[in-house]
Image (cartoon, rainbow, N blue to C red; front, top):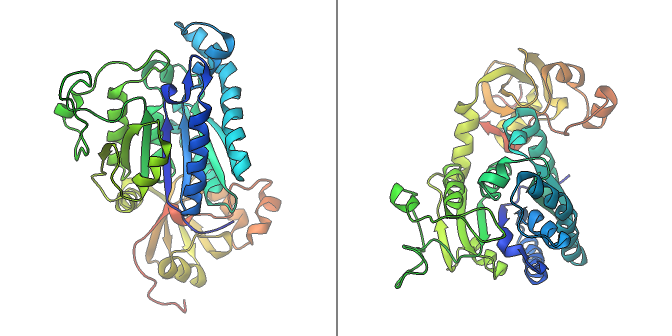
Length: 378
């Protein structure tokens, strides 16, 4: 697997952008697929958080807009397959694979499931193949998203999950207006440095007949993302190619919400100081130097000893043989499993444990280096 870390853009596609009374919007999907190919050419990776399952199911069943939770879940269960088939049909001819992930808020609230989702997404995005993860709320069983968010909040949480640089929210409006869009003289705010109560009052009601979200949920998503070091762009879904202008720093027709904090610095502070340290992994000399001086991931072969009881997903201190704390990070394996595979090659993990979560015990994306290794020889 490649160790190169590529910048990621998360694109949230609203129902009104991808679905209509006559079915899914093939032109939009075709343009989005071409944009994905251009992003890959520029060494970016793309994650799509998509709505539209209920809209696609409604079209297939030829029924009016569902009103009850049961009706919405039934439409979603029909539409989800149609939605994924449409994405795959547009991406596959360009040599790009699609990967489906259905999430609920409970998945991102549970530490182990959060870690599993994160590991899966990073494997897809950092691998040698071109893959676009397609993420949707599990509408056929979840009720919160159908009631409160139209995937806006989910897209912000996913942007956190994959350490995205940008979250682009594509919708049926061109951006955030300084007053109601129908009022004379209404203008799009090109940039919103901070989402203040005054800005929040500009948000209107619910969205289109097909969607369930509104501007308020988009502003809430922007607050989550920008507080995590992710820049946000809110723009019309008519021309998904403008995503290229966003990541290139060009002028865009829409509203930009720049992050208030540096992305990497925010994550470093969280890893270093925001999580309780549950245990210690003592490194051999080679691993200590590789991690502290070269920013490498920790592999089982580099573990000399373990201290404390910890589980997968916990934060641990990484110390050298002299007791110096060189780094902190989130482990992919608990102490009991690490005790069985420490000192071994990555090719032996599955043979010893009967499973393998990852080659890395602590991936460099989940690690912050605190100091250089003062004694490379040991």
